[in-house]
Length: 357
Figure (tube, rainbow, N blue to C red):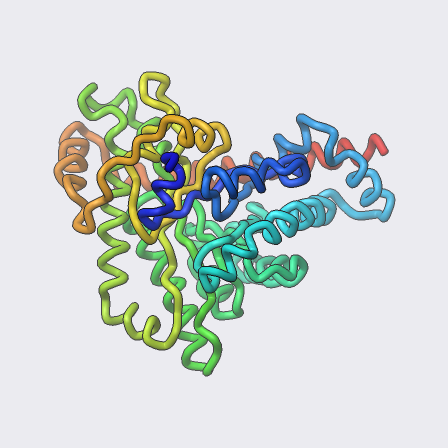
């Protein structure tokens, strides 16, 4: 059993953090499903921008859609939904076999809507309907402005991948928004099985403090925060509030580890994936990391439900002068701004290719 399949066997889902038209069309994604136990896929504006800019696979479709008079944003969502629909079809057997727990793909709403909750919900509802795939998550950032949109989208029956979470407090706020949406559905007598994942970002923590902490604490903050998040996740699943909706048929919102590629060249390229083995969670990883993991991953001990030594490590990092709460807010703000920049670059690339038509 290769390391990727070993993770799957212990109950963690490996999702690919990448999509291109070629990846789906040439059989590569199907091979990853078969050989590396990949059971889902995530996307974001940066992934699509790189795929469209650095190849010709989308050029014909862009020309045809531009000839119909579509603006760049509408054109992009058509392209993305075409790709993700094909991927969703590949994952549909997993989705059906797990009763909707696994086998998902994800599409992000426009980051330009991040501070507009009502517009975000309208976009989420429209995109989910346009795709017509039950195993499509709509990604909504878990920022303060996004929490209301997450609740309303869940209440409206839209599955949500909550993105841009960094701390345990941000994770819990997102989980509570999801729970409120489920509780609203139950109060109206609606189906409570509207699935969700909460995506917490790992490696950006370590990059942010690499010059601020003693050498012994380098590359420790991200994993310690994930251990703390996992403890809060397990506490939530044991809570009476969760049990009430579970008894009514709801599926849990799974914790998803994102940004798990290694940025420090001194570390193994499987560092974060090795350290985050945990049942009932998802790890979404870039293609390069996935391939490395299939060859030489070393799944570590399963995360402790009580967070293990997370508090000791976080205490040492705080003592070194890092304000972890303030850093979490900064990372989330910076992440939102980065998504906007990537979105603008994506739309510019599509507009330029459309003009070439």
